[in-house]
Image (cartoon, rainbow, N blue to C red; front, side, top):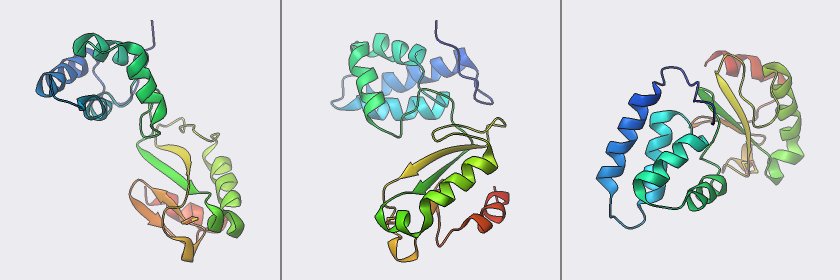
Length: 162
Ligand code: FES
């Protein structure tokens, strides 16, 4: 059996009961799966196999279909995510202006690989493709906040805000 989510504050049974309520709300509505998965991820913190199986049973949708949707969209995650998500832009403008160095600096400072989450559960590190700030590259996002003209020396002061 899949390990239960270890996100802070996640109470497994309570979370599944909440997800069941969400499914009831969307039952029978067209195109409801993505909406249900979004809300389930908010409730549970991530979408491990166990949660996917629960949704599959409750909605009567094959597990293969649910797993396909979860793996297709980058905003769904099967493992617990950090409290904050850092996305370093590696679009062309950011890449040529040092985005890769910023990414390497973050990996070193946070002690994580790309896609990983820090041991304290604070940050998950990912990359993005152009976040619309090319004129002030390299750029990165932490949650919804955009940081422009980032360089390795600025990382410490940016991270301490969180
Ligand atoms: S390429 Fe990074 S913001 Fe556009």
